Image (cartoon, rainbow, N blue to C red; front, side, top):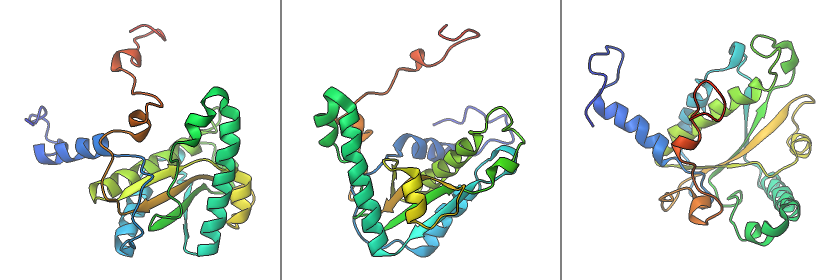
Length: 221
């Protein structure tokens, strides 16, 4: 595309801009993986990208735990599977529809990471006095960086959140006060979904921009 900011000396060139927007547009929450191993140097790049994320008060609350023990991976999968059934029970009339969805690829992916919030977060007050959950917002930015870097390099990532944080914390030997927020399935894929899988499965659809942008007063287009 033509660079609309050619007059801006801080703008990237057109190809670089296209690449950034392409990664954003084509990122997918993946559930289907090949078991091929991931180059450790490549994985380190994704984690470095995550660690470059912004964080409130520069607290950098994210921590990454690589799961290399096969038995622990199976335990995590069993827990997620149990939580999947409990989630279905809470879904009411959509329970059967939910159970037909593939919601994770824990046993199939090349790498499994637990992303957690570090213990002792209460000492970070900058930007969190009235909004303490900004630690979670910061770590979410790190995960998105990881996701986009992986997509740019052709690897898939799936964020699994069907788990009891306290159970996973204990299972993974995380210190008291820390909090797991994501199981990241990372791996090679045969293909990226052409659109979000939950949209393909008609679970929901993307909202129109006109319905999510307001002016001055909430709800005013």
